[in-house]
Length: 290
Ligand SMILES: Nc1ncnc2c1ncn2[C@@H]1O[C@H](COP(=O)(O)OP(=O)(O)O)[C@@H](O)[C@H]1O
Ligand SMILES: [Mg+2]
Image (cartoon, rainbow, N blue to C red; front, side):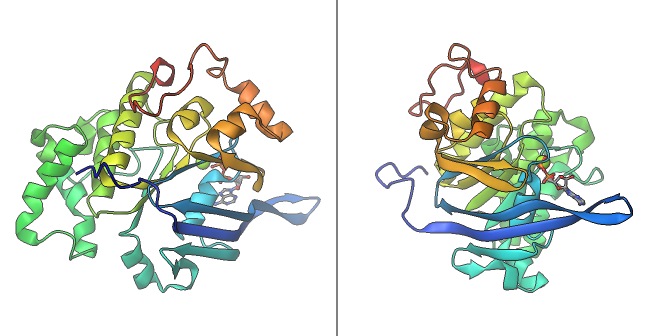
């Protein structure tokens, strides 16, 4: 279903985040409660079909940012406009309905899939909320189609997640997410919990699906080699602040901020020989990714 002669990237942003801020209560110091500003006035846009990477060391606020966009945590300030809808003003029911269009993939496919549900139940579960996505009579066939799409045999439909490997579970999580026909996937370190040999396969799948389904990605990762391969734009977070943002190749070739340079220097696979130049015309990951 790839539409070759239409541009992948439309002009209008589908997600526009402005001044997003989230504080947590921190540890007590000398009897005084501190606060941690996990996300500090962060702004960015994602266009239809675009991949924006959020990078930063552990604790820089990446997950809190992702969760705030979906209101899995409630941000303290800012706006999140998705397809022109101000998400932060929605009621819980309206927010649940809107999640059909923006889905999240978590790092840990062991924690994100209910162990007592079969693969087909897990994939079909969101259709109980989003009732108009697939007609009841078509659900069994659609589950099989989704399994094929994520590279799993149809015979997995009746298995429980405990029978599957980490990579297979992440494929189920992806099938479940794309099963509601979203426009944006928020991927929070989607391959970090997987064996290195499996990572490349899942990344390849994500890149193929993005093109086939014309999905936009908010791709969170601390793996800069991976980011360079998959993302058109990068936003660098440091202690909740955006320290740098721009086109991937510009950021990688001319990092402006010291922190970005430190991140790049710390990335073992960016020494030029290990990853080589990414080739966007060929979405298969180079050896450096897995
Ligand atoms: N639920 C929470 N309660 C208190 N502090 C939190 C909570 N979640 C995250 N934090 C703090 O917010 C900061 C950013 O965390 P996080 O968003 O998980 O970063 P990252 O995903 O980049 O590793 C860290 O200092 C973390 O300790
Ligand atoms: Mg995180």
